[in-house]
Image (cartoon, rainbow, N blue to C red; front, side, top):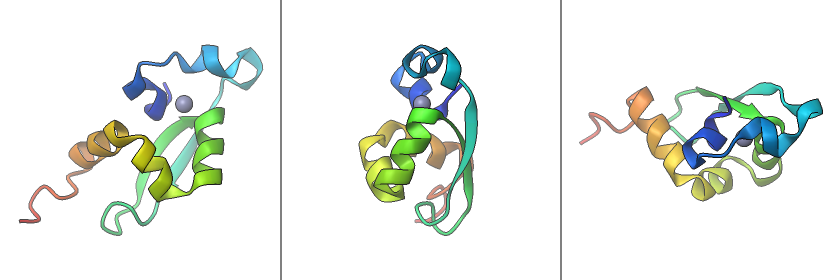
Length: 79
Ligand SMILES: [Zn+2]
């Protein structure tokens, strides 16, 4: 499952087509309080992340960001 597509409810292997339905591991380096966060991304999402950069990509994928924040505990005890 592609993490970005799954929060949007998109069938990633359909949108990517059979030849490109493999997942890549991507990392966010700066967006989560200098913690390194790993995500699994399909070819299309990995391409978008590469082209847009972390902050733009996460701004367009707000639900992914909040899920990653929850699962990785970022901001959890920050206040
Ligand atoms: Zn995807």
